[in-house]
Length: 92
Image 1 (cartoon, rainbow, N blue to C red):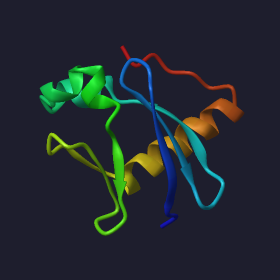
Image 2: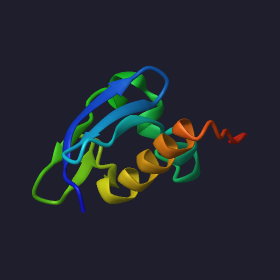
Image 3: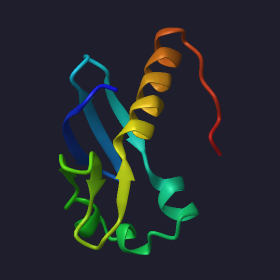
């Protein structure tokens, strides 16, 4: 599985991810945060404290929330492919 190279927090609970195989893109974590009741991440100041833990291969926040970078890689790859194929879906 490709390794995460960098992560940047964006506005409105979005992150931009780059992987070592060239896959990169933005992921909106709003629904993930709501679905998993990660209430601490509703505070954009807390959300912006995201970091990558190389030992566990997870995205982490000081409040204790952790997310698997492999699952996010699959999401970024799919979104990138959909964009290239001009396919859009309504995530509402």
